[in-house]
Image (cartoon, rainbow, N blue to C red; front, side):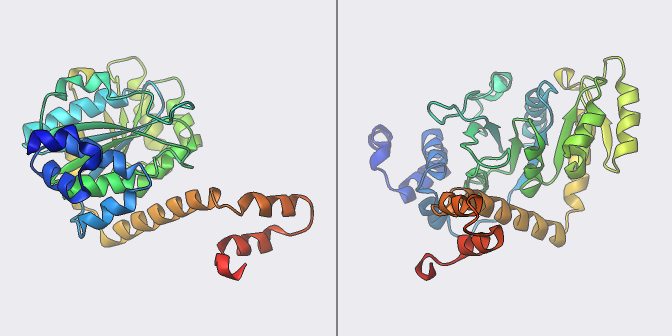
Length: 302
């Protein structure tokens, strides 16, 4: 039976996929994650029913800061405590296929054969911010499949990275010593959403000065880390756990509100009437206030 449905995944029902994934099938889990990136997302979510929330740790920061190395070290540390861990790495979309360019991260290859570690790249697919539109659904699915923790790594470019705060608890911003990273992070808005700031590669010159600069810019804890050697990982885990213990209903409500607004904005950007309304405003036949009202209006009333 198992071999038969594995050969014909496209013919298997969503309920059967969920049951197989719950029994440890990596292929069924992969198929379900593909479905939540497709128009069948709602079918998967409906089949899941009520799901207890799962912890989500967000990792973001500029390219080259060592995010993937840090994630790999975090996964090792969490696995040492017996937790099942899923990693979602949000990558830029390929302009040709829409798929994730970076694939399953090479720097996380040490965990590739661990059945209690899932590593998945998710293409952004044109979503407004740095997070893929499918990420909240993927997190819900992973919670239903009894993962204890989801580590969410974003691509780390531009102000859109602040969107990670909508789903993560906490958001960890990774920076490097020197090179004006502290100032650039402040300008990009990263420090506004940082719950924990980490200066990685802290064995380099300028690390202590960067820490001082960051502490002048943010009230969030600022830690030093050498992820490639595992130095400072224990302190980072302690900071993450302390943040989680201090989480409140108000913060959870704010994250839920931000998720809804982000996804709603994405849907509005692809609204079939947006181009027509924009043309009317550009040509002076309408004003942006009325056009916005019509964009929200029920199509039956238009």
